[in-house]
Image (cartoon, rainbow, N blue to C red; front, top):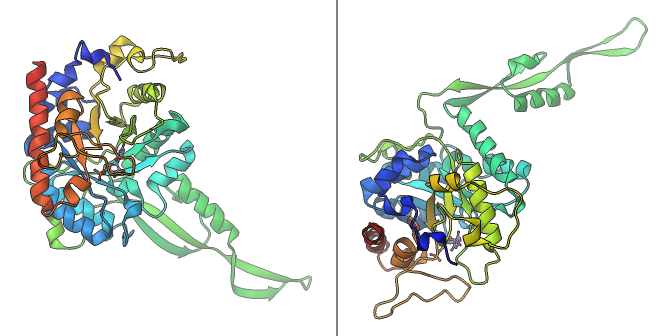
Amino acid sequence: MSTSQETQPHWSLKQSFAERVESSTHPLTSYLFRLMEVKQSNLCLSADVEHARDLLALADKVGPSIVVLKTHYDLITGWDYHPHTGTGAKLAALARKHGFLIFEDRKFVDIGSTVQKQYTAGTARIVEWAHITNADIHAGEAMVSAMAQAAQKWRERVPYEVKTSVSVGTPVADQFADEEAEDQVEELRKVVTRETSTTKDTDGRKSSIVSITTVTQTYEPADSPRLVKTISEDDEIVFPGIEEAPLDRGLLILAQMSSKGCLMDGKYTWECVKAARKNKGFVMGYVAQQNLNGITKEALAPSYEDGESTTEQEAQADNFIHMTPGCKLPPPGEEAPQGDGLGQQYNTPDNLVNIKGTDIAIVGRGIITAADPPAEAERYRRKAWKAYQDRRERLA
Ligand code: BMP
């Protein structure tokens, strides 16, 4: 796919990650750029291992080499969903210890109302432990703003802990802090417990004295700004090179895939670019196979007649971060990495970061199936960082 950047590289391709901090529109992206400079790493580990205990052990060992750890929580056996002591909470503690962000590769795609619930509620409560998640926007741009709203709503409550109390009496609606709690009251109004006494009325009919059991949820300031508090002292170690990550949540739009025969065409990718430009407060960037900053419709889908386009000015302002899976080093003596026989296509870190202009190389089996994963992660870190340095040198 040809891009306008081949003739005129976008400014973000030439700048260092440190320089890009200034013009980032998302606090988590600014933080990530700074973290990348501190750790001299633009490596993400795709930790697709079998069991939750393997995931935690791997994250602890490989943590020093990476800036992002990517999960698929739904392929992990033994994932513990407890919000304070479960796998998400433990991963969050390891992220603080080693200085990396957690990216749940959930690829949300549905109507806005459904994705809001999938993101913030249900079993996994992804928003609580994953700094970053992603969306396949085939369902339309509205799901991006719906997820942004859900993240914002969650964010506003973060410094508070939920206190649940149970009382007996008649509930008053304005005791409740939010709509959800009000709905609960409505439900509870219907659940009438005939408790105390039953008397005979003057006309001889039975009547009941009714009392209502109320579950009240209030939000109280927590001691620490962290939502997820963990259990052991060891979990309180904090990476010394930089402050803890901000509590903001971010989205990556799945704009292109590495798999053979992928149906995401230029028109879809262009819609991703427009959705990103429209939702800068929540969208950090893309999962893509090439750099999309400054890209035009002509470069992606020249014959596509879209309703509204973006301006040249908007395109110029792009400073999205690009994370790229399908990354592997070739075996010794070979030039190019082979696919996995199941449709996955691989590129080297140099091809992705230096030539195609993406920022973070996502590596899974290249590291996890190696004899010594931490040593292999270091090798990938060095290669991906060198590819970034080579890009800057090449375009200077
Ligand atoms: P591996 O390096 O082992 O092939 O793993 C790649 C990881 O990245 C997998 O978790 C996969 O789901 C994910 N991924 C991908 O391979 N290509 C894409 O385009 C998007 C992905 O999320």
